[in-house]
Amino acid sequence: MSAHKIKAICFDYYGTLADAGQPFITLKNWFAKALETTNPQVNPDAFHMQFTRQRVALSSGESFLPGYVILEKSFINACRKYNVFLDVSSFNRFAAQLFTGCRAFQDAKRILNAVKGKYPLGLITNADNRFLYTNIAENGFHFSHITSSETVRCNKPRPEIFLAALEKFKLPPSAVLMVGDSLAEDIFPANALGMQTVWINRLDAEIPEGVRSVSTLENIKTYL
Image (cartoon, rainbow, N blue to C red):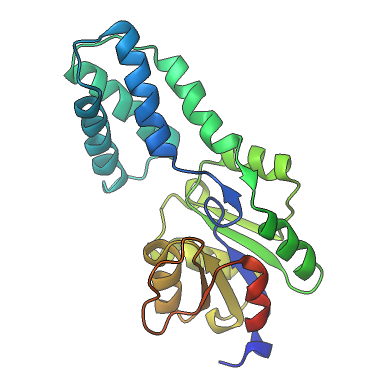
């Protein structure tokens, strides 16, 4: 597909435009500090493993749950498992800050400024609206359309969330470029629907055959 046929650009958000760091490692450290103060007999690695197992199970369940619900339920489950009494509201506030306090990558600001007015811009993101919209506003981003997992009630890589975004643009998949940092959640499912894709490979990982990749977002202009 020739580049001049691209008529809109969709981005993933966290990890692509906004730097969320490694939120689950940050949560693991929070668990260790909280347990050291209140329940030093509990192994923080085991507590974190229980939290992770519950989070994965809830995330992959048949019924959609917003991310903040999954995190809270997973935390409560881990507390019950180890019979500890950590403050749920403190956990919720800390977890929320991980996703509302993310700073924009500098190359994200530059590329959005470079292409605004030339293409309709959208988001396709696994995110809770309360956190997502707060962070978008803090970073000064503007998009023609935002398609979140909470709104569509399904997560990437399921095709429904991509199809919902395409419906907003009223464009065929081949006319929309998807840009994201996850091969499994962004690139492969978008390719499967016939969208054009570019993988933002900030960590210089091995590039799979057939995947178009850039190390900085400004280089997506090569494909426009």
